[in-house]
Picture 1 (cartoon, rainbow, N blue to C red):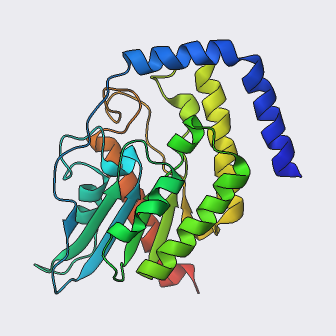
Picture 2: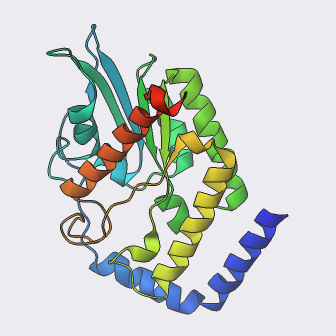
Length: 244
């Protein structure tokens, strides 16, 4: 019932602002630079692996805003994973611009059928802009988690919270506020549906040093912040001082 009323309030405002929102949406698509997914290796699966990493999701997971995968989330995580000496890490990146949670679910058969130590998920922004219903969002989160756990048996599975879109500099008001509201609604469902240890709210400063030139994606410093927070979360979970 609470989900129904959250949905109803949002759509009441959405309908009232529909002409303005539609016009602003067209303007944003027309004026915002469309940055490409960065080049770089997306799959490396050596026979002997010290650790393994899977990154799945949307354009942010794909590294849009970086010039190469080494600067993107994948590369920043690989740089920080606890490999020993010259041991190799196995990794797979399954992420594309525009992908929703449902799109990711439909592509999971493309990843190696093997265990991954770390799985990092970035979905939600396209579910915000595509106005995925809260009920469907919940169902897709459960399906995605279930599929990843069964297929990858990860030691660490982290879903990145939907970023605070009301801070995105590329978006004008009231579109920015409306999408930010929707992002908060999706994040509430995310926290209610998954365990607290599975959700990571990444904090990246919204200024030019950390953002890509489109004002929508992280830049290399933003991806570095993201990776550091992922590693910090997993370190916290394994610190014996935190678990008695």
